[in-house]
Length: 449
Ligand code: SF4
Ligand code: SF4
Image 1 (tube, rainbow, N blue to C red):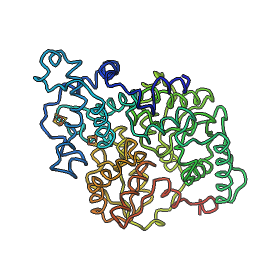
Image 2 (image 1 turned 180 degrees about the horizontal axis):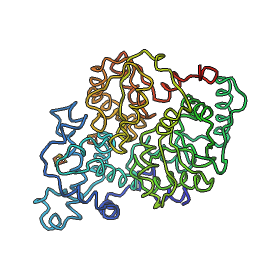
Image 3 (image 1 turned 90 degrees about the vertical axis):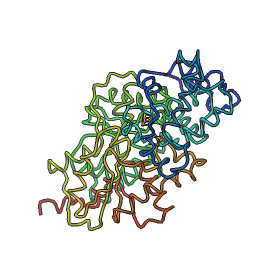
Image 4 (image 1 turned 180 degrees about the vertical axis):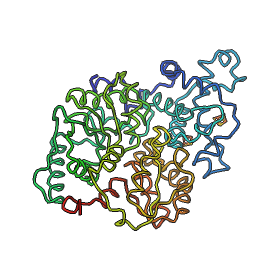
């Protein structure tokens, strides 16, 4: 699909063309079995309010309840798609005609008061997937151009450049060459290769553009581990961005475009596996959602780099010194990694090889609270105040552990946690698993000693 064709068809960033009258048709076109069930099964028991950090942080504000947020899209469904609502709208609480002002309010609710963490869904006795309804509403608002500018900008970057930070091909290649030099320097060797578009490798490595543009430490660490393990790996020239704002914006076509770029690169280069760097929503998009968006029959296995590192440690391909790291460490489960993807024990297994003082936060695993920066909230500054206000739930959870360091396996969580740690002045550092593994790594000349 041509990106520019899509942009003009999607009317991104052109609010003048926003049409409230298109909403029912868009809803009808996008609703599926999962969202239709969630539209009709809520019994308004209020249980989900006990799960949501927005509702917990503002216990007297009914607008923060997950059911209330979902009801805003449910009203449109009841008015236009539900037969009872069409005949007796008041009976089912259906909304009236949808106006432009309603859309602006809906935008602030679905983009500004939900981080898509899905904690409410896990705690709903009826299995209502409020996060899926929120994403459905976001996708419809994207179609009519009623969308926060930051979200629109990043989506545009992905459509136009194939990556969310507008990294040019030249800058990408330059950064990789710098990363190779740094790895060689740190390891004291001169034969490190960071391949681009190499065919028939064991795996293709997909990264978050943040690793290329702002924070190469993660890529340096990965390249170091891959070198020590003797891996045959490559980055693709196109399709290297594993992040996917199709997930956050609700735009399945963008989801298909981004995930498809990576799947096609893996097939073109005949890679045996796809390995995704530490990124929660990127992993979820590539590993689970992308196949459906791209209607792709995936035959190439996908894993998180955390699973790759576990294999290296288990098979002795890299070695770590457990006595080196003395700080107390707790772990933050990313919603997209734990709740959505089931990777709970894997990061803990690694941390237990490295940290002598590991402390669980509570709740944890699939029941953990969001870092509060999920679903693209970090690129929508207009919602920063409320994001940091409700982050007090997470701040309290972190503080109670008494740990010196909070570790996560997601770039987005790292930024979200960093922001709230600074806002609440917590005496705590935030790191990622690869940072800790790199810090404990026994370099080759010392291995075997
Ligand atoms: S979404 Fe689930 S938990 Fe929340 S009010 Fe509806 S039925 Fe109850
Ligand atoms: S998905 Fe998370 S942030 Fe959104 S309503 Fe549910 S619990 Fe709240």
